[in-house]
Length: 480
Image (cartoon, rainbow, N blue to C red; front, side, top):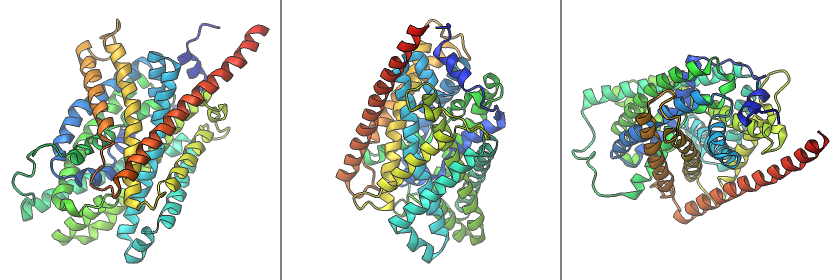
């Protein structure tokens, strides 16, 4: 051995990646990754009481996430993010599982973004296009084509891919601001449509509480820039500023846009795949400004394309670093000779997501049920990776070096403990079927089987490739 740590070896291996991301790039990346408008209809469909869940998630999940990401990225700024952090704190197996859950969560989530984008098209395209959207075959085929177009854009280089992300962040911000402004205008002209006492909590409704997992999932993403640590210019200074600016704007957008959606569309009428555009449609009709719908639809579409690009890119980086470390086929660790991007990893994510799009319609599932099931699967697997993030932060918070990083000891202890508790709760309630599920048994079967298969496959692959690494290393050591 030459005395290098695993982190140093990984950094050396990816040094040829281009450092192209600055503060504003990270801010827009945080916005497009975190403030995904597509989850708002799923949440708003459970009624006004979800606003309380938003406030709880912002305080006990999102704020700790920001503190944790800044603290961990400052200590371990290399490529891989959650993968690298967990590997440093808990060893290779847990690092691999954290990275595996992170990128597999996104291969569940990316199809939901594609579904949402197509939902916008079918809603605004008229009756003939809407009929096409009701066909699972046509819907799925278009979803796969859109997915691959986004993958190709990112293969062409981080310099190309980041502009897709930045445009998506701008589209997200503009769409959210327009939704909030229209909501305020409707209330000022026509009064509040919510009945008195609708925000009051009346007992425990588990179908509503199940949306807490989706809310927590909606707030993940501040760590996405850190996954591309070796592609950030001066990460120790850039990451804290980019995360802070992005987090504040995301929190404002989510609360304001959810409230506007609840005010504009009755709970029973919310469509989970087209809800945001539907809200704009209803509000512009009430204000006599229907012409606004098409520009808004374009902004929402650009926002969604940016989100697809951002999560596909971040997921590929985890696959890329796992390939370098030889815990997955080493081909995933290859870099394109011309564009300097992890092209094989990007192609791999696109293939896996395409397969899930095809599988999501199994068992005569509707587009709506396929969308909700994929979203809940993404929540469960993503929450596992976040348990590792907060667990890594807890090791620091209650270790000897607590208080020597970016934050004080009590701040990172609050972040670690509250983050662990809310993440565990979000994971558990994701298994509770919401009002949008047509078949409870089919939903639960898909949830449990999918989670068992993906986690079992991860453990099997780790031990298989660990043994192969050992078999290769022993003869090399003997020759030395």
